[in-house]
Length: 105
Image 1 (cartoon, rainbow, N blue to C red):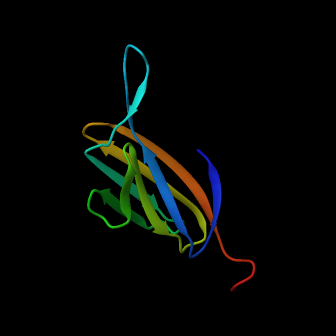
Image 2 (spheres, rainbow, N blue to C red):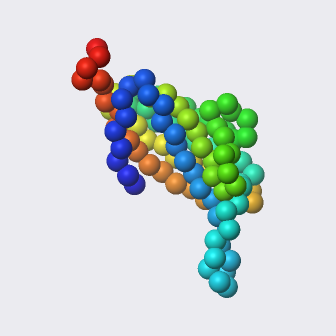
């Protein structure tokens, strides 16, 4: 997990990559899943869920990469998880810190 800092009111892009590994060669081939579900837990405990394909916050910019862009609005530690299903099954989690501006109130 990486720890990043983002200012309140800024967009954050959560990224899930998917690849299928060849069991003989070990080579990985980027592969789109059938679906991806991003679960976001805000610092105040609010839970939001975004599903690709379908929700406008989600995108598939290149094969094997699903993104979910949200605007952070609550200071504190925010956590997220993504689970993919179908052709490429995987899961990952990460967290980041949301901070208030030191310049603008």
